[in-house]
Image 1 (cartoon, rainbow, N blue to C red):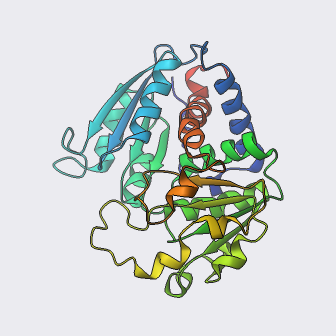
Image 2 (cartoon, rainbow, N blue to C red):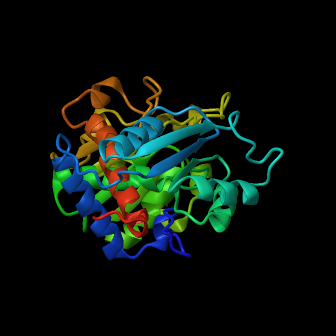
Length: 298
């Protein structure tokens, strides 16, 4: 039976450093067992709620549950009455009677938090408008694979200030790495000061261990003006400012070729597909953490 206080995974700032390190360590172990995965989710079911289309989130969670012996149930906003005829409170309580965990990808972070408040099983934040913790755990895993211990590393972000940026900021405080966000002046003004926002892209890239960006126009932002972002495109000239060993990261999908040039995205420093694969393994470890009270043996 689930505990009275389920282990949710909603915002990185809510976790202590050691818990995040333990989840990452388990993610590396599960990746090493990729072709002989332990069946630790046998008999367990994950419900997956989406209000927008998804490629990596849907595939990585669904495959992760299947690899480790569990099942998944995929539900779009057209499949259930979430926020419609039925309240979020009722939805959370009902779903908790059917499944062992709920993965939620909703635009409105407040709706996710309300669902978690009423659910009696773990709720995992697969992305909201202000937070993307699963993506950051995969990114941190990738950095550890390529560069070793993340403590003390410099991660430089370029472009817009979004949910991925916000979660990187939370992670930087927990895992002791330097984070700097190169953004247009008007975007700097609304960015969290913990992101060390700057309009100077070249200076931000200097001696960076990791160069990272994301699309300038997120899903649902059609028609957004992008002219101000062009000075923050990740291209060969910008990468040249970083360390020779620096890697390039992008959570995908890429808007070709806006936020990153083709030569960088397809170049030897790009680890975008390792990063995409690591969504699978990082999320398996997150699920294992959340489902520990359901009898999962980590």
